[in-house]
Length: 258
Image (cartoon, rainbow, N blue to C red; front, side, top):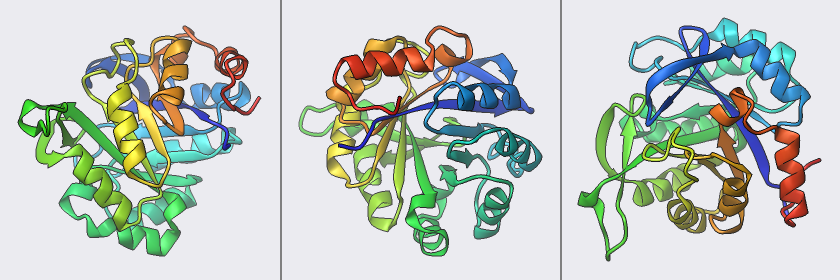
């Protein structure tokens, strides 16, 4: 069995790490470079950096900040925000990223998934799906989930389950699945949502949105079938220490890297 991964996320706005609730009401969470180094030193398996306003502000990801972070860490590093072309990916990889995360462009131009996978390898391409519960997408009595883009600001009319299968079929190497309903609420990951998408594709799914305690990670690994779990505020503000979390998971027979 592959080890489950614990991934802190740096949501960056104007060069600073921020965190909100349901994608709004952002508050400062610290210096991105310092936090990245701390997570790398203290047992994180990977790190995700998301420039959360790059697409909305129609600018490129903060490449200099990405370069500075990459110099301080020794773990795999995924970068997203404002990435729209092969050239954008090339720049991020040259700045030290190991993988790139694409979101809005997946909807606008789904062909880009295959193009990036062919050029850089599928292991480099993470499709970030920001989803929100929407009754209009209910199927067979199950909760419906809609894909959102532009940092959770724009509804697309796309069903999350259908779109997850599409990005998988087009060559994505991984899915970063974020529940906007649960984001920052600390009430637990969306277990049913995560399980349904994990079971519908043959690539790793990273669960995101809702982590509030160690048990939530256990639940999303055991019941949600996630391959990795991402969190922000509980790590940024010291509510959960990564190695404490890993020891807890190991004690509960969940394979992690200690």
